[in-house]
Length: 194
Image (cartoon, rainbow, N blue to C red):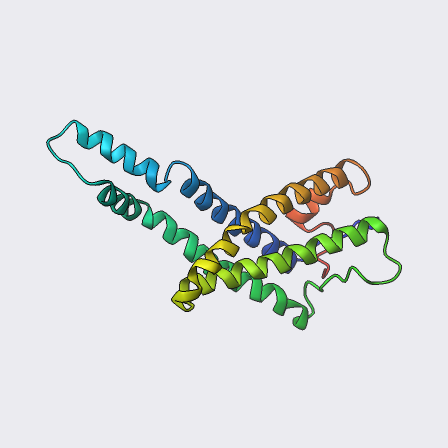
C-alpha cells in the first residue's frame, strides 16, 4: 500500500467534515436522550408538582420542544454547513484538488477497492441525508413526514461508517501504513495534492 501525503485542502476538508458530522451526531444523541421531549416534559412536570402550578401533558410537550429548540437549531444549521462542505468537496477536483477515487479502476488491490467503495457509498448516503434534510426544512409540507423517516435512517450509515473508518485507520496505522494518522493531521513530508 502506498504511503500518501495529504494536501492542505484534503486535511481542511477532512477535519471540517469530521467535526461537523460529530457535532451533528451530538445533537442527535441529545435529542434521543437528555433532551428527548418526553424526558424534558417529565422533569418539568416533576418540578411543577412541588408548586401550585399545573400543565396538561400536551402543554408539557410543547414547553419541552421549546426548551430543546435552540439545541435542535444547531442541528439544522450544522446541516447547512455540511451542505456547503459537501459542495466544496465535490468542486475541489475541478480545481485540481482532492481527486475523486474510482473503485472500478483496473489494477487496484482488493483492499483499495473496498476502501474506495466505502467512501463512494458514504458520499451517496450523505447526499441522501443532506437532500432529505433540506426537504424537511425547505420542501413541501406534504413530503415532510416521508423525508423525516428517510433522514432518521442517516444515523445508522453514519455510525457504521465512523466505526469502519476508524477501524480501517487504526488497522492501517498498526500494520502497513504507519504514520497515516500523523500525515492526515500534518500532511506528511510534502504538501502534495491528493
